[in-house]
Amino acid sequence: KRHRFWETQPVGQFKDIGDPSLPEGPIEPPTPLSEVKQEPYNLPNLYEWNTCDINSEETCNEVYTLLANNYVEDDENMFRFNYSKEFLRWALQPPGYFKSWHIGVRVKSSKKLVAFITGVPARIRVRDEVVTMAEINFLCVHKKLRSKRLAPVMIKEVTRRVHLENIWQAAYTAGVILPTPIATCQYWHRSLNPKKLIDVGFSRLGARMTMSRTIKLYKLPESTVTAGFRKMEIHDIPAVTRLIRNYLSQFFVAPDFDENDAEHWLLPKENVIDSFLVESPETHEITDFCSFYTLPSTILGNQNYTTLKAAYSYYNVSTKTPLLQLMNDALIVAKRNDYDVFNALDVMQNETFLKELKFGPGDGKLHYYLYNYRIRQALKPSGLGLVLL
Ligand SMILES: COc1cccc(CC(=N)NC(=O)c2cccnc2OC2CCNCC2)c1
Image (tube, rainbow, N blue to C red; front, side, top):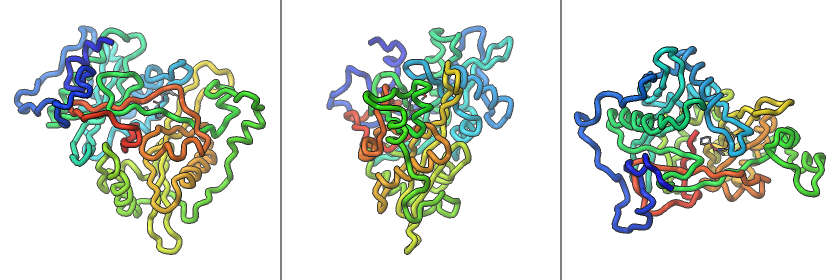
C-alpha cells in the first residue's frame, strides 16, 4: 500500500524490515533548535491553528464535543469513543505537559473547532535506554473535512512543536497499519452486562445459548475475594511506584514512572481511573496492584441505550496474589460499579488471564508505533509494557 506521507517520515519503513545493517535507536539525529522551523506549517486557507487551553471550560467543551461527534468508531460504526471532559483534563495534563502540544484547527470565519491533535511528554524505556518522548493522541478531523489531507499537516505541526522542546521521539497507536508497527495487539472484551451488550449489538448470543444461560455464564460475586484488596490512596504512592517500576522492568518498551508520574497516572480519579492494591494484612506490605480507566462509548442507533460504560485495563502488577484472582477482583469491582464491559489488550501478561476470565477476542487490532526510533524486530504483545489512553 502507498503511504505518501509516512514514506517521508523518520519511521521504520516496510522495505527496511529485517535489514540487520540498520542499527536500533534513533533514525535521525536531533536538529539544532535554531534550525527547527520557527513558524507553524501552512494550513489550507480557510483554517487556522489554535492552541487549546483544556483548563478553560469553554474550550474543554469544544474539544469534548468535537471528539464525541467525530473521533474513533469501531469497524462496524456502531460505537464511538466518548471521552469525558475530566478524562481529557487528566490525559492531557501529566507532569511537565506543554499547553502548546494541545493543538486545535479552527475555521477562521466562524472559529469553529474542526480538528485536534495532542502530545504529552513521557519517559519511555526502550530495552535499557530511557527516552523522553511525546505520546501522541486524539488526532481527530471533523467528519465533513476528511480526505482534505489535514492529518499530515497536523502531524507535522505537532512534531515541530515537540522538536521545539528538544524532544525527538514519539509513541502512538492506531487501528490501521502504517509504517511500521513495533507491536500489533489484539483487544479482548469481558462481558459484565451481557443482556445490554447483546441488545446493542456489541456481543451476539452464543450458539445453543439462551439469554438466561448467558447471564449466568458471566455472573460475578458481589464482593472481591483477596484479603487486603483496597483502593489506592495518596500515601501508597512510594510503595506503588516501587512495585510498578520493578514489574515494568521486564518489558522491552515501558514507561519509566517516578513518584510524580505515579501520583498523576495511578491515583484514583472518579469517572476517570480506578486503582486498587493488595496490602498484606499481616505485614502491611503492598504486594499487588491493578487499575482500569473509564472510557465510555456512544451507542450509535439503538432505541434503548445511548452509552456503553466500558472499563479499560491499565497497569496491573501481581507479585503475591495470582494475576487471575487479582483481575477477577477488578472485574467484580467494575461490575459492582455498573460497567457493561471490561476491555483489555493482550499486552504484558494479560494473555495469562484473558481466556480463563471469559474475555472474548475483539474484532480488531491495535498497532503500536514509535517515531524516529527503530527497533530491530517487532515485539510480541507480551513484550510491551505500555498502555496508551
Ligand atoms: C466499544 O466502542 C468502541 C469505540 C471505538 C472503537 C472501538 C474499537 C477499538 N478501536 N478499540 C480499541 O482501540 C481498544 C480496545 C481495547 C483496549 N484499548 C483500546 O483502545 C484504547 C487505546 C488506544 N486509544 C483508544 C483507546 C470500540
